[in-house]
Length: 602
Image 1 (spheres, rainbow, N blue to C red):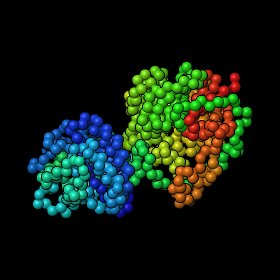
Image 2: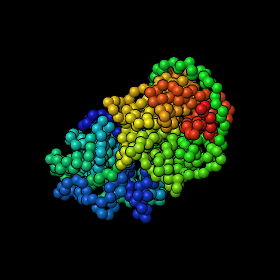
Image 3: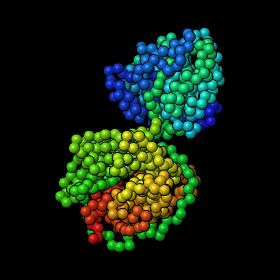
Image 4: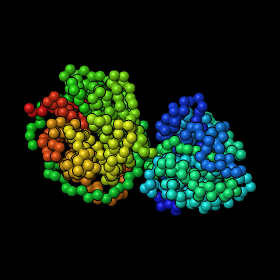
């Protein structure tokens, strides 16, 4: 079978799929159980080979059932054996379910940590249908409908009814933005006898098909169930079904998209596949070939840390430096006394940081999303872990406006932080810029960015400035004035890889350049894909690293260069973060265990 493709409704794409009905362990608090399902258990399932898509559908608690009453058909949800949620699995092909046997065993063992009962049913080859999935219509809410075949009705007749009558009829209604259907094979306990949980499934309580319907809003879903078209199907449904259980889905989470895990790894995982894109880049400027700036590099000294690989650095009003290191600790260092404090631990991989006026710290964590740390209590508050239905995979950098609006970047949604080089080899834009409003609403502002990275606001907050590391450029996104909502290029064809940006002060901001442009990497944009894939498969030890140089550029808010500082050092190189404080420049790097203090000329 070919991989599922997205087609206009009501046309359908046949897929091989499965539904897993889930009952949470009653002794666990519901929210704790749902969090475990979204977190550790999703990690296990999403890493399974053979999956084209993996979605979780937790059902809303309470409610009597959404489907209107039909004589001789059970539409009221029973209080006993009430289902808590469903996993929807779509496979890459007919043999997809067989590809992940080893990983499946790990996921199966983990089920007992959160589920009291699980029941999996396969649709069989081509037994699933996708209608209108992802065709550009925004889905605001969903419901799941479970159908029980009427005894005595042949399975073939039931299958034809679902695939050729019910599915197309519902998919053609104006309220329906998405419809997935599965006609399920006869249930066999031997196919799903996972340890430590119940699999009792009496014949009178089994389901023979499932539907997942998506709507623009709750109002649209209500209009759907109240429509004459739905009521007009009542007699056919009565003839084919004895039960029609419609559950409201509280939220949908998507963890595998087009065969790729969409969530950040929490332990070492194998490299994902590469999908190279042809890209022609301009020749780098002559400045890229030099390893020293136009002026002598100022006096500098290394400030040692107790941790490794600080990716970013920011300074508070007292001149103390805050950075995050491998292992999750957030450190505060006094550059004068050398005193170091641990403010907290994210338990992940902290990257970009931002200090807020109340003393709290915003942390972009590659594993956990956008967080807020309160140094007074060391408590961590998750701010953004999902954007829409998919996890925030590679949260990179953040800046805060005075009104509480947060602007943050995701470098790529295709690769984990640990595999970021893959995004460079692909030359495929997959970075994004987001806005989080003070009420918590998150909006995608820009997509298809070449490794979105550092971000800062202009001093008057009329525009946002952000870096694209693999685009070798700085861009300005207008927030106010006649150009509001427009983007223009501030500085293009930079001589190196721009990473984090400092806060703009006195009309000036700094850019950390990790390493000079690599002509070989630029040429990979036009190199055949198989060569790039072969290079990507090579061990990490054979992958090219940064040139041992320290480099930072300063610009004004119009993109005019103001300063160019570069030198070579053995004890510090590959700057990824930069901040200016009290007459000094401070640089952070993923490739060392300290910060570099550079005395700026007065």
